Amino acid sequence: MTTDAGLARELLDGLSEAVVTVDPGGVVTLVNAMAGVLLPELAPGAELAGCPVPALARAGVAGADTFDAEHHGRRLHGVRRPLRGGRCAWYVRDVTGEQARAAALRAERSRTAFLARAGSRLGLSLHREQVLRATATLPVPYLADAALVVDHPPPPAEHAPHWTRYVAGDPAPTTGVSAGELLTALPGLAEALGGDLPEPAPWRDAEPAGLAEVLPGGLPRAGTVLASPMPGTGGPAGALVLLRWAGRPGFDGRDVDLAREFAARAGAALLAAGLYSEQAHLTRVLQSSLLPPDLPAVAGVALAGGYRAAGDGLRIGGDFYEVFPTSAGALFALGDVCGRGVGAAVLTGRVRQSLQTLRLVEQRPLELMDLLNRALLDAPVHTRRSQLTTLLLGALTPERDGGVRVRVAGGGHPSPLVVRADGGVGTVRVGGMPVGALSAPRFADAQLRLAPGELLFAHTNGVTEARGGAGGTEMFGDERLRRAVASAAGLPPAALVDRVLQLVDEWLDGQGHDDIAMLAVAADHR
Image 1: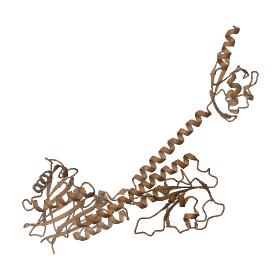
Image 2 (image 1 turned 30 degrees about the vertical axis):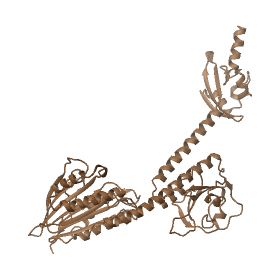
Image 3 (image 1 turned 90 degrees about the vertical axis):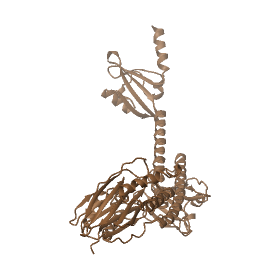
Image 4 (image 1 turned 180 degrees about the horizontal axis):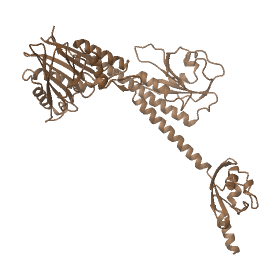
């Protein structure tokens, strides 16, 4: 029996966790070797209620099954197990390392999530100013209490560096042009703009001159500053300066690495935005040659068109309208080419040129659309990729009594609207499939008559999908469009088009948008 007791003791002392047994009266009866390390104050005969680890003492009195505590610089976790005869045993582990590893893992996940969010936000910013504003706002408050982005604007702007500042709690970033003193006033800024990697630096005791505009009075005093270069082509495109107020811990090694990685991604985004801006400029030059033409005069028919090019996009001539006089009246076309860039421009030109030719042999809208589809599919294979086009084709025939008979065919395009003289708005449902995508598509047509005072309004989805409003993300939508055209009932086509364009412009409030095209048709009873 003695041998068994000695063996049991050896086994207990060999455990990596502390074992403390307690009798029914709450008196400690046994402690193993690890208990002497983790809980050196406990010894057989001591009362657990008087244990110098308050959490363990409270757990013993309350009959709790677990406790967590910090003791002698260690984080302890204990679990209670009942024994025979009303006794119990406490198994206590040192979880300091576990918790440190868990905290490190959480911190690493947090850094990874920050970079993922930042990468997504920067990747969606296609304009230089958007990138600069995102670069200033994203690291606050996660990495710093304030952030300053200093960049060199592209020609023909002035050569003085621009700055964008964001401070925690500000409603939006602030921008300005820096004075010469800024480069020497901010620790590490000159080095970062030169491509170096300066270490975090303490803020100078005396407020540097030349920073009154960048860091105005009223802000908390900075404690630590970290400047990082934002890589560009042939050298840094700018620098990111992070500031932490006095009282907040400085930047440790992981903070520095994270700031450098974020600054590198911001530099790449700034470079991409510059390239995008150059492409957009070239696109607008090309687009000017593809704008809708002036509308011809058609006896007995009043026509008006409206167009807004996507001022910040790469869609060249993606939306278009045409009117072709005929012996009976006129043919009209309004379409939207799917795609962006030069490919969309080529397809737009092909569609318009094909219509110019095919309308000489066929002037019935449904049949003309079928011919156009076959013509597009007859193009070489390498030119037919992504040539999806939505289209409305209509034939206008003035009548002796002043009305206009309309036959309209649809190829997957938004349905046109009919605006009655009394303000009622109806929909001409033509549906159909897009043109140029399938060898045997289904197109549909409808016929209607426009009485004097009534108007047909056709548009591309750039109107209804224009995003704006209070939050800047809500679409203009079909119902808002119906109310807009209803409010212009009785007006001539040109006035109605101007009214809709004005409302869309007000809705956008200067934001970027897709191409917008619209065409209004009414009986001309002058």
